[in-house]
Image 1 (spheres, one colour):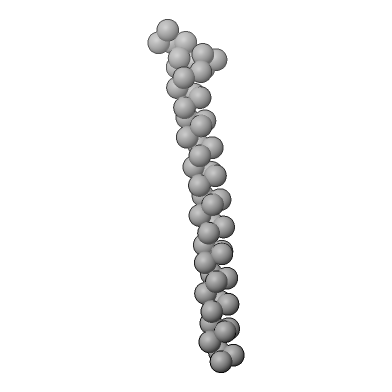
Image 2 (cartoon, rainbow, N blue to C red):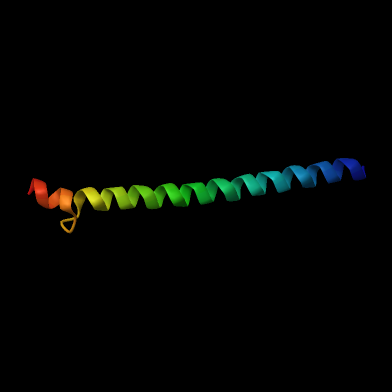
Length: 52
């Protein structure tokens, strides 16, 4: 029974680490999308002033 409980705990631990890593990746990608959107829609940037 101890082996089964230990395997369950390790599986939960792996899932928690995976969730944490995927959350960090999501935060980084969200920041990148916000930056790219701001670059292409903001008037302070050269690319927008050139088109306008």
